[in-house]
Length: 530
Image (cartoon, rainbow, N blue to C red; front, side, top):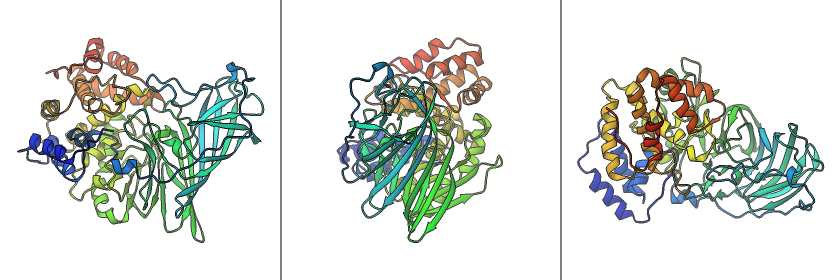
């Protein structure tokens, strides 16, 4: 995620001047990056930094995408407003206490499952929806919040009984008829409707979530876009399983996370049900509705099913771009451990969104990041690697975003190293270190990115250099043991940087405190160790 400049000619000049004379070739990852920077600078007003970061980023959204979601949606204040008579000790916090964004998410409970049911009105671009949330309380709970942006709430039930509710900005405040005891299961059902909107965020310089291109719908919700289309506890600490059911015109296809469990045609409409059986962070939940065609690849030798959904007009480009997916899964399984979910694939939208996002089991690509000539292998590898790093092992705090992006960026190098015998990873990282240090600011500590610039280039690039420096410091055997152990120990849950440092020291038997301080928390980027 990156800033976009407003001056096309400056961007093009910077790209052409800085990159003049470089010749792409198959074994030169740096050169392929350069080639894409040139092309992107010629078709979209992005800074050189933004263009570079499309190659190493999980998600870069264009100004058009920011304004693509249409319409407005009001908020309903309920008939019962939670009053001051409720003991404060029984009220769940309106945030999970994230270091950077303390109001992200909510306290007092853990969600175990979301069942989202949507009827999509393609003409009105609106939804009629019901979301049922299974949760377990972590305290005696007389009042609690969910995150919801816009949309009209008409009813809230808690364990089948009507509950009081009110709206305060993005907070949906719910008062059950009786206090729910600590450690008790509860089921909350919210009925709502309206035109979903993009969600402004404090964690990135643009809005995200429900994106309406007029022809297609696609959801890209990092870091907090999920609340624009369903009520949610919106923080990666609270992962849950999902069932997503969408009824839409039969002429439209629907794609979402997980396995397609059921597809029922009924006259002019079809109902699609997808199930995600593994814990999933809210921002990794996606939905696409439009003129999409399915495409399947043979399962990997380890049995991972691969299915894609491609925009009809871009079908050939999308097939060519995603062709290495099976081989990539097998390479990454040999390094990181078994692929952690039931299925994998991608959805490609017929819109130049300028992004790819690692939504769980179904990564999202814009039409400008597919090509028949296979030049986007690094982006495909990046989003796939996130399934282990970021999706399976999730963040405890958004300040630790380098654990997602630095790891996925380094996985690009690992893929090329495994796929191409002529590829010298040391030479490539050294070349990128020299080149990228000269064109962007890598002196921002990736372990402590600015809260208002969470997805800056240093998180991706210097984060990946940190891992290569660690590999050179501890040796290959220890390094790959660290990666596999990280996935094995923390997969399915969340972790933070201190966990990774401790694990690295345990596996290597080395004191790495100064090493990680230099690479992650000090301003000036160190030199790569020899």
